[in-house]
Image (cartoon, rainbow, N blue to C red; front, side, top):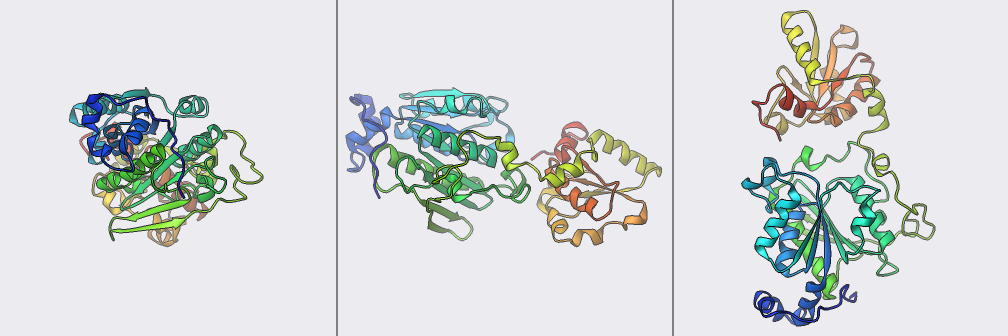
Length: 402
Protein backbone atom coordinates (compact mmCIF):
# COMPACT_ATOMS: atom_id res chain seq x y z
CA UNK A 1 0.00 0.00 0.00
CA UNK A 2 1.46 3.36 -1.02
CA UNK A 3 1.18 6.53 1.06
CA UNK A 4 1.37 10.21 0.10
CA UNK A 5 4.67 12.00 0.62
CA UNK A 6 5.16 13.38 4.12
CA UNK A 7 6.80 16.58 2.88
CA UNK A 8 5.99 19.23 0.32
CA UNK A 9 8.75 19.96 -2.20
CA UNK A 10 11.10 22.90 -1.80
CA UNK A 11 10.84 25.67 -4.37
CA UNK A 12 14.02 24.76 -6.21
CA UNK A 13 17.41 23.06 -6.16
CA UNK A 14 20.57 25.08 -6.62
CA UNK A 15 23.13 24.22 -9.26
CA UNK A 16 25.38 22.76 -6.55
CA UNK A 17 22.51 20.60 -5.30
CA UNK A 18 21.71 19.34 -8.78
CA UNK A 19 25.36 18.33 -9.22
CA UNK A 20 25.49 16.65 -5.82
CA UNK A 21 22.23 14.71 -6.10
CA UNK A 22 22.39 13.88 -9.82
CA UNK A 23 22.29 10.12 -9.20
CA UNK A 24 19.01 10.61 -7.36
CA UNK A 25 17.58 12.94 -9.97
CA UNK A 26 17.83 10.36 -12.74
CA UNK A 27 15.85 7.78 -10.72
CA UNK A 28 12.21 8.13 -11.90
CA UNK A 29 10.82 7.41 -8.41
CA UNK A 30 12.92 10.20 -6.90
CA UNK A 31 13.65 12.73 -9.66
CA UNK A 32 13.56 16.49 -9.12
CA UNK A 33 10.32 16.42 -7.14
CA UNK A 34 11.56 13.81 -4.67
CA UNK A 35 14.85 15.55 -4.12
CA UNK A 36 13.07 18.83 -3.44
CA UNK A 37 10.99 17.03 -0.82
CA UNK A 38 14.14 15.70 0.83
CA UNK A 39 15.55 19.21 0.86
CA UNK A 40 12.42 20.44 2.64
CA UNK A 41 12.33 17.55 5.13
CA UNK A 42 13.02 17.75 8.85
CA UNK A 43 14.09 14.43 10.37
CA UNK A 44 15.00 13.77 14.00
CA UNK A 45 17.40 10.90 14.68
CA UNK A 46 17.37 9.67 18.27
CA UNK A 47 20.86 8.57 19.21
CA UNK A 48 24.16 9.02 17.39
CA UNK A 49 25.30 5.51 18.26
CA UNK A 50 25.22 2.18 16.44
CA UNK A 51 22.04 2.75 14.42
CA UNK A 52 22.18 6.53 14.48
CA UNK A 53 25.65 6.64 12.91
CA UNK A 54 24.79 5.12 9.51
CA UNK A 55 21.33 6.66 9.58
CA UNK A 56 22.68 10.19 10.05
CA UNK A 57 25.43 9.75 7.47
CA UNK A 58 23.10 8.48 4.76
CA UNK A 59 20.26 10.89 5.53
CA UNK A 60 22.76 13.73 5.23
CA UNK A 61 24.24 12.34 2.02
CA UNK A 62 20.73 11.89 0.60
CA UNK A 63 20.04 15.60 1.00
CA UNK A 64 17.65 15.78 3.95
CA UNK A 65 17.51 19.52 4.57
CA UNK A 66 17.27 19.55 8.37
CA UNK A 67 18.64 16.83 10.60
CA UNK A 68 18.00 16.83 14.33
CA UNK A 69 20.21 14.76 16.64
CA UNK A 70 18.96 13.79 20.10
CA UNK A 71 22.08 12.61 21.94
CA UNK A 72 23.48 13.36 25.39
CA UNK A 73 26.42 10.94 25.64
CA UNK A 74 30.15 11.30 24.93
CA UNK A 75 32.33 9.29 22.57
CA UNK A 76 34.40 6.53 24.15
CA UNK A 77 36.71 3.94 22.65
CA UNK A 78 34.20 1.08 22.84
CA UNK A 79 31.89 3.04 20.50
CA UNK A 80 34.31 2.97 17.57
CA UNK A 81 33.73 -0.72 16.75
CA UNK A 82 30.33 0.17 15.26
CA UNK A 83 29.58 3.90 15.58
CA UNK A 84 31.25 4.94 12.34
CA UNK A 85 30.24 8.58 12.53
CA UNK A 86 32.90 9.09 15.24
CA UNK A 87 36.69 8.71 15.14
CA UNK A 88 39.72 8.66 17.41
CA UNK A 89 39.94 12.43 17.44
CA UNK A 90 36.41 12.55 18.89
CA UNK A 91 37.13 10.57 22.07
CA UNK A 92 35.68 12.42 25.05
CA UNK A 93 33.71 14.76 22.78
CA UNK A 94 29.95 15.15 22.80
CA UNK A 95 28.49 12.53 20.45
CA UNK A 96 26.05 15.08 19.12
CA UNK A 97 28.80 17.54 18.24
CA UNK A 98 30.98 14.79 16.78
CA UNK A 99 28.09 13.61 14.62
CA UNK A 100 27.31 17.15 13.48
CA UNK A 101 30.91 17.69 12.37
CA UNK A 102 30.90 14.44 10.38
CA UNK A 103 27.56 15.30 8.76
CA UNK A 104 28.72 18.73 7.65
CA UNK A 105 31.91 17.20 6.25
CA UNK A 106 29.77 14.91 4.08
CA UNK A 107 27.16 17.49 3.15
CA UNK A 108 27.45 21.14 4.21
CA UNK A 109 24.24 22.10 2.39
CA UNK A 110 21.87 21.06 5.19
CA UNK A 111 21.13 22.25 8.70
CA UNK A 112 21.93 20.23 11.82
CA UNK A 113 20.11 20.83 15.10
CA UNK A 114 21.53 19.37 18.31
CA UNK A 115 19.37 18.27 21.24
CA UNK A 116 22.09 17.44 23.77
CA UNK A 117 19.82 16.29 26.55
CA UNK A 118 18.47 12.97 27.75
CA UNK A 119 14.93 12.55 26.47
CA UNK A 120 12.35 12.30 29.23
CA UNK A 121 8.72 13.07 29.85
CA UNK A 122 9.50 16.73 30.49
CA UNK A 123 11.17 17.47 27.15
CA UNK A 124 10.29 14.77 24.62
CA UNK A 125 7.18 16.47 23.23
CA UNK A 126 8.98 19.78 22.75
CA UNK A 127 11.97 18.09 21.08
CA UNK A 128 9.74 16.14 18.66
CA UNK A 129 7.59 19.09 17.61
CA UNK A 130 8.35 20.50 14.19
CA UNK A 131 9.88 17.32 12.74
CA UNK A 132 8.27 15.45 9.86
CA UNK A 133 9.72 12.06 10.75
CA UNK A 134 11.63 10.38 13.55
CA UNK A 135 14.29 7.69 13.19
CA UNK A 136 14.62 5.76 16.44
CA UNK A 137 18.06 4.38 17.23
CA UNK A 138 17.59 3.92 20.97
CA UNK A 139 18.83 0.82 22.79
CA UNK A 140 16.55 0.51 25.82
CA UNK A 141 12.90 -0.36 26.23
CA UNK A 142 11.88 2.59 28.39
CA UNK A 143 12.94 5.10 25.74
CA UNK A 144 11.39 3.04 22.93
CA UNK A 145 7.97 3.10 24.57
CA UNK A 146 8.30 6.80 25.31
CA UNK A 147 9.27 7.54 21.69
CA UNK A 148 6.33 5.50 20.44
CA UNK A 149 3.82 7.21 22.69
CA UNK A 150 5.10 10.75 22.13
CA UNK A 151 5.20 10.26 18.35
CA UNK A 152 1.63 8.96 18.42
CA UNK A 153 0.33 11.88 20.47
CA UNK A 154 2.01 14.33 18.07
CA UNK A 155 0.95 12.44 14.93
CA UNK A 156 4.54 11.93 13.74
CA UNK A 157 5.46 8.64 12.03
CA UNK A 158 8.73 7.03 12.97
CA UNK A 159 11.12 4.38 11.72
CA UNK A 160 12.23 1.90 14.36
CA UNK A 161 15.24 -0.39 14.45
CA UNK A 162 16.72 -2.84 16.95
CA UNK A 163 19.97 -4.83 16.98
CA UNK A 164 21.50 -7.53 19.17
CA UNK A 165 24.51 -9.71 18.42
CA UNK A 166 23.80 -11.01 14.89
CA UNK A 167 20.07 -10.18 14.79
CA UNK A 168 18.28 -7.04 13.66
CA UNK A 169 14.71 -5.82 13.25
CA UNK A 170 13.12 -2.78 11.62
CA UNK A 171 9.65 -1.42 11.05
CA UNK A 172 7.68 1.78 10.49
CA UNK A 173 5.09 2.82 13.06
CA UNK A 174 2.58 5.35 11.78
CA UNK A 175 -0.88 4.71 13.25
CA UNK A 176 -1.98 8.25 12.35
CA UNK A 177 -1.29 7.66 8.63
CA UNK A 178 -3.77 4.81 8.23
CA UNK A 179 -6.58 3.34 10.29
CA UNK A 180 -5.04 -0.13 10.21
CA UNK A 181 -1.43 0.94 10.87
CA UNK A 182 -0.02 -0.48 14.11
CA UNK A 183 2.20 1.18 16.69
CA UNK A 184 5.12 -0.29 18.65
CA UNK A 185 2.76 -1.34 21.45
CA UNK A 186 0.76 -3.42 18.95
CA UNK A 187 3.92 -5.41 18.26
CA UNK A 188 5.18 -5.45 21.85
CA UNK A 189 2.27 -4.74 24.24
CA UNK A 190 4.54 -5.13 27.25
CA UNK A 191 8.30 -5.01 27.75
CA UNK A 192 10.10 -8.29 28.44
CA UNK A 193 10.62 -9.23 32.10
CA UNK A 194 13.50 -7.28 33.68
CA UNK A 195 16.85 -8.89 32.97
CA UNK A 196 15.41 -11.26 30.37
CA UNK A 197 16.83 -9.43 27.32
CA UNK A 198 20.45 -8.25 27.75
CA UNK A 199 21.41 -4.86 26.37
CA UNK A 200 24.04 -4.55 23.65
CA UNK A 201 26.46 -3.48 26.39
CA UNK A 202 25.87 -6.82 28.10
CA UNK A 203 25.34 -9.14 25.14
CA UNK A 204 27.29 -7.42 22.39
CA UNK A 205 26.47 -6.53 18.79
CA UNK A 206 28.19 -7.23 15.49
CA UNK A 207 29.44 -3.83 14.32
CA UNK A 208 28.41 -4.18 10.68
CA UNK A 209 24.87 -5.16 11.72
CA UNK A 210 24.36 -1.48 12.62
CA UNK A 211 24.94 -0.54 8.99
CA UNK A 212 22.55 -3.24 7.76
CA UNK A 213 19.64 -2.13 9.93
CA UNK A 214 20.53 1.57 9.91
CA UNK A 215 20.46 1.61 6.10
CA UNK A 216 17.06 -0.11 6.14
CA UNK A 217 15.82 2.68 8.40
CA UNK A 218 17.11 5.36 6.02
CA UNK A 219 15.58 3.54 3.06
CA UNK A 220 12.19 3.59 4.77
CA UNK A 221 12.63 7.22 5.81
CA UNK A 222 13.32 8.33 2.24
CA UNK A 223 10.31 6.40 0.91
CA UNK A 224 8.06 8.06 3.48
CA UNK A 225 9.41 11.54 2.86
CA UNK A 226 9.04 11.45 -0.92
CA UNK A 227 6.04 9.09 -1.19
CA UNK A 228 7.82 6.32 -3.11
CA UNK A 229 7.24 2.58 -3.00
CA UNK A 230 5.55 0.70 -0.17
CA UNK A 231 6.89 1.57 3.30
CA UNK A 232 7.19 -1.03 6.05
CA UNK A 233 4.02 0.08 7.79
CA UNK A 234 2.44 -3.02 9.28
CA UNK A 235 5.54 -5.06 8.50
CA UNK A 236 8.40 -6.31 10.63
CA UNK A 237 11.70 -6.89 8.82
CA UNK A 238 13.92 -9.45 10.56
CA UNK A 239 17.55 -10.02 9.63
CA UNK A 240 19.75 -12.92 10.73
CA UNK A 241 23.32 -11.99 9.80
CA UNK A 242 24.75 -15.39 10.72
CA UNK A 243 22.47 -17.23 8.29
CA UNK A 244 22.17 -14.28 5.89
CA UNK A 245 18.39 -14.57 6.01
CA UNK A 246 15.79 -11.83 5.69
CA UNK A 247 12.18 -12.34 6.74
CA UNK A 248 9.20 -10.03 6.58
CA UNK A 249 6.27 -10.56 8.92
CA UNK A 250 2.85 -8.94 8.95
CA UNK A 251 2.14 -6.80 12.03
CA UNK A 252 -1.54 -6.11 12.57
CA UNK A 253 -3.05 -3.26 14.52
CA UNK A 254 -4.19 -4.52 17.92
CA UNK A 255 -7.76 -3.39 18.63
CA UNK A 256 -6.93 -3.81 22.33
CA UNK A 257 -3.72 -1.75 22.14
CA UNK A 258 -3.33 0.41 25.23
CA UNK A 259 -2.33 3.38 23.06
CA UNK A 260 -3.93 3.23 19.61
CA UNK A 261 -6.67 0.65 20.23
CA UNK A 262 -10.40 1.10 20.42
CA UNK A 263 -10.39 1.81 24.17
CA UNK A 264 -6.97 3.26 24.98
CA UNK A 265 -5.75 3.30 28.56
CA UNK A 266 -2.52 5.19 27.84
CA UNK A 267 -3.71 8.71 27.13
CA UNK A 268 -0.57 10.56 28.15
CA UNK A 269 3.09 9.96 28.90
CA UNK A 270 3.65 7.48 31.74
CA UNK A 271 6.49 6.47 34.06
CA UNK A 272 8.45 4.43 31.53
CA UNK A 273 11.25 3.39 33.86
CA UNK A 274 8.73 1.81 36.20
CA UNK A 275 6.77 0.32 33.29
CA UNK A 276 9.86 -1.39 31.89
CA UNK A 277 11.77 -1.92 35.12
CA UNK A 278 15.55 -2.18 35.03
CA UNK A 279 15.34 -5.07 37.45
CA UNK A 280 12.47 -7.15 38.79
CA UNK A 281 10.74 -6.32 42.04
CA UNK A 282 12.22 -9.49 43.53
CA UNK A 283 15.74 -8.41 42.58
CA UNK A 284 15.19 -4.91 43.92
CA UNK A 285 13.95 -6.32 47.23
CA UNK A 286 16.86 -8.76 47.46
CA UNK A 287 19.43 -6.06 46.74
CA UNK A 288 17.91 -3.42 49.02
CA UNK A 289 20.05 -4.30 52.04
CA UNK A 290 22.50 -6.65 50.37
CA UNK A 291 24.57 -4.47 48.03
CA UNK A 292 28.25 -3.83 48.67
CA UNK A 293 30.64 -1.48 46.91
CA UNK A 294 33.81 -2.52 45.08
CA UNK A 295 35.79 -0.81 47.84
CA UNK A 296 34.11 -3.06 50.40
CA UNK A 297 34.79 -6.07 48.16
CA UNK A 298 38.48 -5.16 47.92
CA UNK A 299 38.67 -5.11 51.74
CA UNK A 300 36.88 -8.45 51.93
CA UNK A 301 39.32 -10.00 49.45
CA UNK A 302 42.24 -8.78 51.55
CA UNK A 303 40.68 -10.23 54.71
CA UNK A 304 40.13 -13.54 52.93
CA UNK A 305 43.78 -13.63 51.89
CA UNK A 306 44.75 -13.02 55.52
CA UNK A 307 42.49 -15.87 56.64
CA UNK A 308 40.12 -13.74 58.70
CA UNK A 309 37.14 -14.04 56.36
CA UNK A 310 35.54 -16.72 54.20
CA UNK A 311 33.30 -16.16 51.20
CA UNK A 312 32.92 -17.28 47.59
CA UNK A 313 32.89 -14.64 44.86
CA UNK A 314 30.75 -15.65 41.88
CA UNK A 315 30.89 -13.96 38.47
CA UNK A 316 27.50 -14.40 36.76
CA UNK A 317 28.60 -12.99 33.38
CA UNK A 318 29.12 -15.02 30.21
CA UNK A 319 32.48 -16.75 29.51
CA UNK A 320 33.35 -14.32 26.71
CA UNK A 321 32.98 -11.41 29.12
CA UNK A 322 35.16 -13.06 31.74
CA UNK A 323 37.95 -13.27 29.17
CA UNK A 324 38.00 -9.47 28.91
CA UNK A 325 38.45 -8.61 32.58
CA UNK A 326 37.84 -10.15 35.99
CA UNK A 327 37.84 -9.64 39.71
CA UNK A 328 40.55 -11.80 41.33
CA UNK A 329 39.31 -15.04 42.85
CA UNK A 330 35.91 -15.01 41.17
CA UNK A 331 34.30 -18.29 40.10
CA UNK A 332 32.39 -18.11 36.81
CA UNK A 333 28.79 -19.35 36.96
CA UNK A 334 26.74 -17.61 34.21
CA UNK A 335 23.31 -16.21 35.01
CA UNK A 336 21.61 -18.90 32.94
CA UNK A 337 22.81 -21.49 35.41
CA UNK A 338 20.95 -19.65 38.17
CA UNK A 339 17.80 -19.42 36.08
CA UNK A 340 17.74 -23.16 35.37
CA UNK A 341 18.68 -24.06 38.95
CA UNK A 342 22.02 -25.73 38.18
CA UNK A 343 24.04 -23.01 39.91
CA UNK A 344 22.83 -23.89 43.39
CA UNK A 345 24.67 -27.23 43.35
CA UNK A 346 27.89 -25.34 42.57
CA UNK A 347 27.62 -23.09 45.63
CA UNK A 348 28.73 -23.99 49.16
CA UNK A 349 25.99 -25.64 51.24
CA UNK A 350 23.60 -23.19 52.88
CA UNK A 351 24.73 -24.24 56.37
CA UNK A 352 28.46 -24.10 55.54
CA UNK A 353 28.88 -20.58 56.90
CA UNK A 354 30.51 -19.47 53.63
CA UNK A 355 29.00 -16.23 52.39
CA UNK A 356 28.05 -15.95 48.69
CA UNK A 357 29.03 -12.73 46.91
CA UNK A 358 27.78 -12.17 43.35
CA UNK A 359 28.94 -9.78 40.66
CA UNK A 360 28.31 -9.11 36.96
CA UNK A 361 29.22 -6.25 34.64
CA UNK A 362 27.14 -3.49 36.21
CA UNK A 363 25.03 -5.02 38.98
CA UNK A 364 21.79 -5.79 37.13
CA UNK A 365 22.29 -9.50 36.43
CA UNK A 366 23.88 -10.11 39.82
CA UNK A 367 20.82 -8.57 41.52
CA UNK A 368 18.56 -10.96 39.62
CA UNK A 369 20.73 -13.90 40.67
CA UNK A 370 20.82 -12.60 44.23
CA UNK A 371 17.04 -12.96 44.44
CA UNK A 372 17.35 -16.61 43.42
CA UNK A 373 20.16 -17.26 45.88
CA UNK A 374 18.33 -15.64 48.77
CA UNK A 375 15.23 -17.58 47.86
CA UNK A 376 17.28 -20.76 48.22
CA UNK A 377 18.18 -19.89 51.80
CA UNK A 378 21.47 -17.97 51.47
CA UNK A 379 20.24 -15.16 53.69
CA UNK A 380 23.60 -13.40 54.03
CA UNK A 381 24.34 -13.36 50.29
CA UNK A 382 25.22 -9.99 48.75
CA UNK A 383 26.02 -8.59 45.32
CA UNK A 384 28.47 -5.96 44.11
CA UNK A 385 26.92 -2.68 43.04
CA UNK A 386 28.47 -1.41 39.80
CA UNK A 387 30.01 -4.82 39.10
CA UNK A 388 33.27 -5.24 37.25
CA UNK A 389 32.84 -1.83 35.60
CA UNK A 390 33.18 -0.17 39.00
CA UNK A 391 36.04 -2.53 39.88
CA UNK A 392 38.06 -1.47 36.83
CA UNK A 393 37.25 2.21 37.30
CA UNK A 394 37.92 2.39 41.03
CA UNK A 395 40.20 -0.50 42.00
CA UNK A 396 42.13 -1.86 39.02
CA UNK A 397 42.31 0.55 36.06
CA UNK A 398 45.05 -1.59 34.49
CA UNK A 399 42.33 -3.90 33.18
CA UNK A 400 40.37 -3.07 30.01
CA UNK A 401 36.75 -1.92 30.18
CA UNK A 402 34.01 -2.92 27.77
